[in-house]
Length: 573
Image (tube, rainbow, N blue to C red; front, side):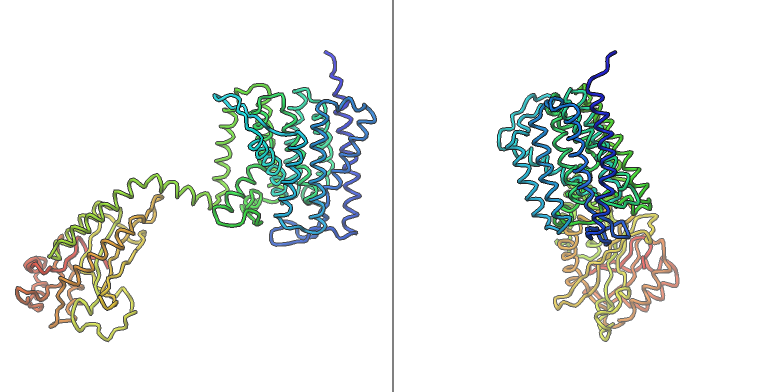
């Protein structure tokens, strides 16, 4: 079996790149320290001491040295395959590198860096490196046209370039992710017979290996924007060049899968900031490596974990090289893995989004609940007896998700003259429960308590509608509170104001009757406080005296049309 003639080219290019990068990184690090071009410590920084930040210069210089040596040793014809495309990618990457270097020396505003990247990507498109068609499964070839093709190409270059810039927040992370992606792209380009693209890729990989000797934790030099932007742009361009012999859907899928970590991190960052209503370019400490650090992992361990993820993604990208039938399966597996990983990272923005989506799915049930509450409010508005009002409330809450419900009234409303000297802002627990309903086996300690006030025309609070709902369930929802707070509460408030008749003769009897009610737990229907009505006045002393004879004495109290006050099941306090 004969040896491929390009193998010595790849080996020599790799060795020259590693050696030159190692030497140049040492020189650039010393120069940056003398010139004061260091990255200071800060809240978002992982390092605790200033570190030189123009490591990208060493990578660019080592690539230039290696390319010059390869051309001198093997001639330009070895790089003739798609030479124009390679020149376009390298030219655009050098332009982006200069933008990043300026930012490293004198920080630029994020919008100006972004605008410069867009201009450079447009220049690459004009030079001929572009995506104009897509080959989609079950659809066929789709012509994107000039405008859509230009938007797609610019978005690809700018997106990948910024993806590497965003993940460059941990020692060795961006360079390591680039190394695994370059390995995949080298395999793809060499299998497709693109010697030029494969040579540039292996040289860039060797330059990254030499730089990683100084960049892995604890790093003594950083890539800086000059390095991360350069690597990102080169990877975006080589990703397109290296897969040009595959269907376009594969040409796009391979670099996306190979660059899965920076692409995922950038996508999550944009989505998080959008959901939070924050500017897209505002920096934060919620990137993937930040989340892993917050879980207690060391910087070295986080880097190794993410290296493993990059390696798996790189291997997945290689599966797409020869057979497009694997695209759906590979992308499905990757999608499931990414979903599980994001779930383990516990991004609260996405948990809230999932909750909203789940609530949207339950809107049909919510509509039914709100309609039921509004219908009950209409029925209550036609009633002229408080007993019937309370019966309607019990029937409605029995069909709802609340565990307990209670009507409480102030003493000044239960008995005229009681509490007239009490501060209107006193404790609400002093209100008297005049009606209560609850389900069996309810633990109130685990429930949320909601109070909706009843108000007199003067604006003074006369009592409350108190509701309890179990807060331990995953699907706890208070979406029906609008109908309860606006429709039901208002109707019950009107009925209490219209039908309630306070006891003028015994204003403090409510306290005694409430205490008596505590001794009669288990009674299904209890009359706690008889009151004066248009049919006559019941003697409170007689009812209290009957209370000593047990529940029978209570049940003898009539339920008049003006409404005796009662509890369903045991009184709640």
